[in-house]
Image (cartoon, rainbow over all chains, first blue to last red; front, top):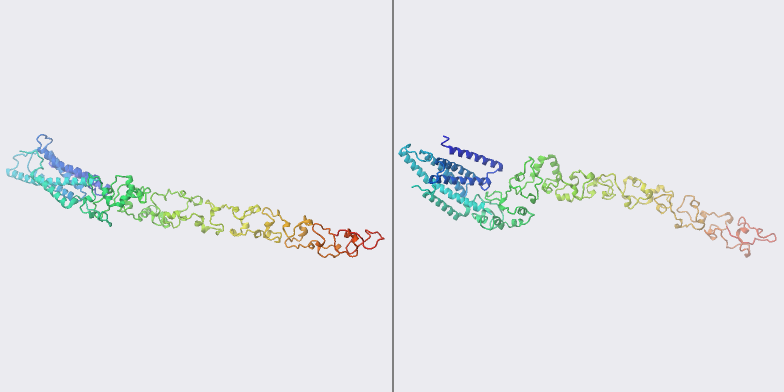
Length: 184
Length: 456
């Protein structure tokens, strides 16, 4: 069980640690860490980097023909880990204000995490090797076909949400740089 | 065939990205930068600057305050374009903004004035300890730690809003520290602490009164401030406290103002006694035996001012002349010694000349009477029996003070002129009632003697 859900436990542990740190900062500064200051900004940046890694690394590994570092299952675990922890950090970065484009981006992030959980549930219905290859013959052809259809449908929804998220997130980052970070 | 594209670059993914991008662009076109707004702007303000009465009134016009990173102008330039009074202050180091700019030239307005925090949020927030608090008239040098021995934070004194200060804050905290002192102190000086205290502790434990012109020495050391600074309600009131002795000591002044109001002429702050009084600075200098006199010999009942300065006021009982020489003893006497009298009889109406010179006082003034003594000759000189009452009291008809041996040149009965040259006593040997001729003439000659002589 633990083996099968290792990435979830690690993600949960990371979230607990981050939450503890977040609480400590609140206790020290007596305020919710603003998105624009060191801690709030830091977790936003790291969280977004995690989300970028979620978006790209697993996909790159899956499609790479030359470099085959690590098992696909490990990359998937890492994809799930960053896909949970990254959005959680971004959620803390919001300082619980969800107005404007930043709020829309947060909403997309939450949606895609939920979508990710759904996708993982569908994905794990199909037995695979550690390298992610389907193990033939364990499911009936109908069940396998049904699962593949569901997975393809899920991809059709999950990927556009991710793209919308990243477009809005990049615009948000650009606007933040323009209006705040690089402001003289 | 498997593509090595990123998995996200699917047709639907790209379409979703484009739709999102267009949606954002469309919103930006329609509503400006409003979607980037991290929070509502302040709606506070009652004065029109830059055409608006509040930041919120700028709407979605981000460029009203924000500059592009590649512009030369900074956001602070946008601020000062409207807040021109602050722009002036920033060039004046006597102001908060001027001092901040002097100390930290790169400090932006937004460092202390954050925005997008809501319509009613404070526009001034200072979490930095580098705020030059003394520029607002109160240094924090005297406030290193709270009563709980913790570093001060703004909220300790400025509950919620650093632009306001409730005067009761001082009283509340300091009363916890020193209840008795604060009770007495506020009774004496009121409760508007900032009128006197500016935070540098100049009136605190290190206060040195001796830097002022009125230095505290002697008995003035250790006095409570309020004993001199009565009803002071501001530092200016302390500065104008009158420094003359009488202002504080009039109630205990025993001389009733007879010595004037400058106690320091005789007394020092070391104590009322001993007093140092230089009588010789007064109009009545103490010379001779006066210098040895005790104060109360002249100043009876401690009456000092208005003490009569004429000799007789004190020396009437000493007057051996019973007032006959008047009341101004100094005509003859000096303070050195009564005996050392210097009386010039010749300045009187009866100069002592001729036979009177050198006569002892008692020979004329035998009765002890000096003034008013009759100046007639007969007062001293009795009519001798020899005159036999012939000349009355008109001594000066024959005598002068230079020559008592008078010569009688008046009419003479019964003798001829050839007796000229004879003295009176040649014939009148005992009295003028009788005469003898035989003293000069023998028996053959009769009649009065013929001779002359001086009369007595």
